[in-house]
Image 1 (cartoon, rainbow, N blue to C red):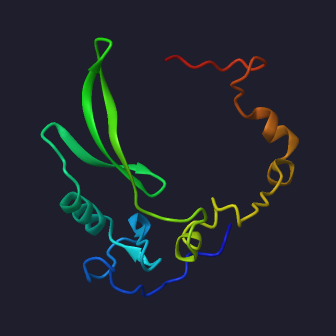
Image 2: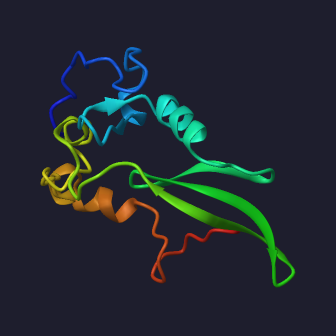
Image 3: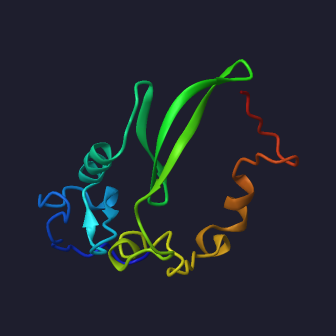
Length: 140
């Protein structure tokens, strides 16, 4: 397993000045490159953007927000992205974010213990099998 996440003191949120309350949900402030509270970013974008009735601001992922609405398309309700709002800039994750997830980061090369070193052949053979060769089945 990777080393535990180091304890860090982060600068206050560059948008609100409040302490960073949850570093795992922080968004990179494009002006400073520092983590900003998610709620502060949402508040800032809500004040900047024209969100009409029936629309709302949503996080779309990868540092992008959007104005979304439910609309009927071909007789079905669909979530439509009316406007994309890129907030984070840059292609790579900032250093403060990379250190939070070394286990899933491209910077971390896992080296799991091979199963034959963990269990004997008899133990492995006694495990239930869920493929075509096994007798175990699953119902939905």
